[in-house]
Length: 99
View 1 (cartoon, rainbow, N blue to C red):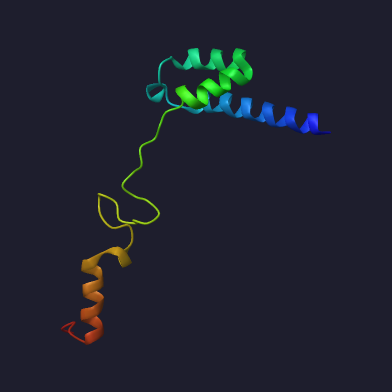
View 2 (view 1 turned 60 degrees about the vertical axis):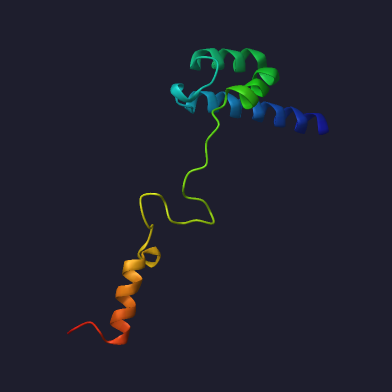
């Protein structure tokens, strides 16, 4: 039973790498072309998958938006993150809306 689970796990990793190669944009791949990485991953099985994960897969740089920083470089995400909106709400709550 353990052999079956290990085999399924290894085949899953290999299939993940094959699909990842196919879905990755060719301009983001490192060292080889898209077809080159596909052949290496397909024929190399686990060694090819390991090479793809360690050396071929694009490394994504962190973007300006992270879990601790909801404001991007372009501006606030929602109205509650916009300082001008919050000032307007404060002004209306105080009754300075001029109506």
